[in-house]
Amino acid sequence: MLIQKAVRYRLETTPEQENLLARAVGCVRFVWNRALAVQKSYLDHQCGTLNYAGLCELLTSWRNTETFGFLAESPSMPQQQTLRHLSRALKDAFDKNSVKKFPKFKKKFVHDSMRYPEPDHIQFNLKPVDQDGRKVLPKIFLPKIGWVKFRKSCLIGGEIRNVTVSRSGGHWYVAIQIEKTVTDPVHPATSAVGGDRNVKENILALSDGTQFLPVTAYRNLQKQLAREQRKLAHKVKFSANWKKQKAKITRWHQRIAEIRKTVLHQVSTAISKNHAVVVLEDLKVRNMTASAKGTVEAPGRHIRQKSGLNKSILDQGWGMLKQMLGYKLQWAGGMLLLVGPAYTSQTCAACGAVDAGNRKGAIFCCLHCGHEAHADVNAAQNILARGLQSTAGHAGVVCSPE
Image (cartoon, rainbow, N blue to C red; front, side, top):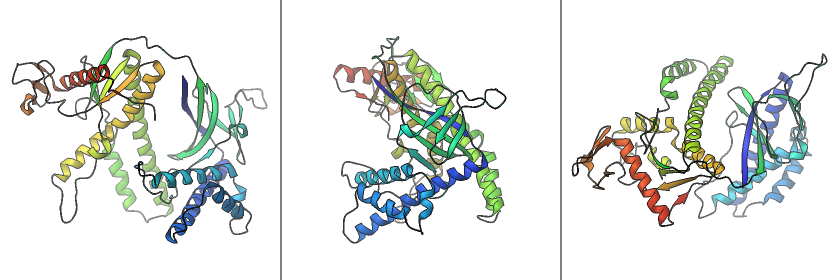
């Protein structure tokens, strides 16, 4: 089995290296925006679009001019790679079978990153020593940036395919995509469970009765975040103090995201190790968290309640949990199945009767046979039954890693 994964390390940059990285990602953003403007101009004049080779010729001409000569001071490979991404994005936008939209112009400080597609240009010094012979942090060599120290928190463990450098929360990170071939794994467990995702009492309830506490990172830090945002509103926009406060808020959001990711990793790892087959509802999270405001002609209803529900769903990270379970089960030799979510919370797991009155809050009480159980566990048992039935009929959907 071919395993593709990424390991992410935090870079320990010097002020000079931070300036070089900021200029490099700025050049990548400039190339994307200017190339996108050229493509939109071609489309407006009904001349089609330039292919990747044509965009590369434009990039070469830009790098050789005085006006855009600053592009030549930064590495060329990430600039070429962003043109490749733009060509792919335009192709997907015009694909009738794709749901992706037309690419947008990139903003400063929003998802700043650049990718080195050729691993041969990247070097490592994993056991460096200083002048006194003491061990120091390992280093990675980035073209036109130099040797940069990084915190090696785990082994690389595979053949390097590409390297992505990004900025998040005031720090720089390097993500190394690796690839390795292993023998087809056989899961040590033989059990199958169904899972019902929730937002209140638990993030996930399993059919065997196991329940995992919900993620409350955003809810716990919401007051502190609101206080910092009020401070930002009282400062002059784009002033020095405004930028400092903006960076502080960014760090709060990063902290919330890291807490959420840590909890989801713990939950998905525990489940994938103990169960060979996991069945989840095929929920359309994007549709479920859509705004209820509506339009001027047809305004929505219960907007405040729907907004609170959307916030809770997004805070739990349902989509991320499904993704983690998908690739972790595949790596362990297991399987993730997705089934239709209709009436799973109203169906009795004992007799199969469907009635909206069966569920009363957190308790499920069947009005037909008297079966009582935790409502989420009962729904998880129904999900498991549907998954096993679909597998028997060869209609199961396997969730592959994204």
